[in-house]
Image (cartoon, rainbow, N blue to C red):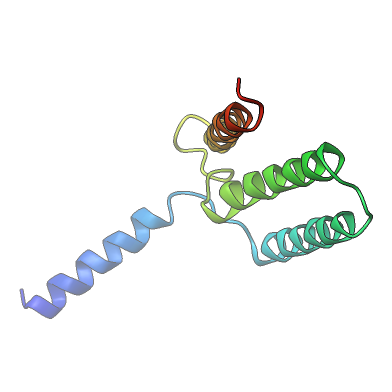
Length: 116
């Protein structure tokens, strides 16, 4: 068998294996785009409303976390990949990771700011 035929066969096998897990549809990608655009617009609006301190930062962090979960779940195919236990579990694991990182960051900043 020639190298070209072998490469084509391997590539075809890769396509079949790659299609074993689900992908979002084009419509779902557009809905995610719109949802992310709306959340981003609301973040910008929130920053211009004149809030300060925790009233400004906490809602922005919550919106950031929501966008992170959406991007990790959809664009990393975690939400749709049910082959590995349950895709939603992996999406929530990513969310838990960023929440833990945010908690550690907050604790470090609080330590320096308030001399805890």
